[in-house]
Image (tube, rainbow, N blue to C red):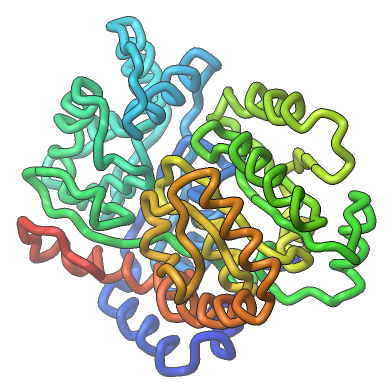
Length: 410
């Protein structure tokens, strides 16, 4: 499916919001803007940039997207950094820091930011590219998509020295704010309502996908869509499912793909398969890049959606399900707390036992699930669509002309 153009969003967001975007962009028309991250496929960052950059260009922002290169040694280190920033106890050695620095220097030699008016560096992997900044030229922003509310102290001190060389930092949730000598801007990420993963689908297509994976359409379906990552706690979902099925006949779908910068995914996938065993009612689907229509169909065909994350940067899979008017059950971690308001747009739980109880409750009360789903869609419509995200990015570029030393919500 061809990428949607700005005008295509008019029916979703209305004419007034669309015109506001165009008006904001006129104040920045022609500026050069670069985005840099560590992977072109897999994960929310790549998905957002895949849509954001063309929309920026439509608004006469000369945007580009670069992806840094790294070997297995680099991505093993950055995965460990990722876990440590989320609060997991990790041992970080001098050799690991050296691998991180060496790859950043190699990428810095290959990338040219000359003439860029604004450079957005996404997450820790390319953070040292600030060394490429020309003195006094343009603005540089560190865009952090992960939960840094309780980071590994030594690692954060190492990274903070780089962060404070930027003109500002963007965080996804209020709880992620840190004591920094630069302004912090609060911008949640977003979903594209017109992308294959989120657009409306005909019933026969949804049925075809469920049939393809031998999922019984006549019985309730509980689904978690996520990368196979220990922080997503798929093993906990399997345990909760076993508890639910003792009282209610249902099926479980655990579906997701991988990311090129996540070397642990296949290990976790194997752990989940072992825990599930030969249970015919547990469907474990390792989907390839580009399976967005199938993911869309799996969510739309499900009865209840679960996001059992123990740690989370934001959790766009939650917004994706909410946009499809699905009742979502999740833990109150990271940016999920901005999306799921308990008993209003979904349900929040604090344990595996609580997850099982909530699943049983919604399966037994479909009217409640439908009510939560209707509220959820409207909440996403007003807060987490890509057009709102785009507006906030434009405002950040304008705000950097008059920076302040505080957290700013845009």
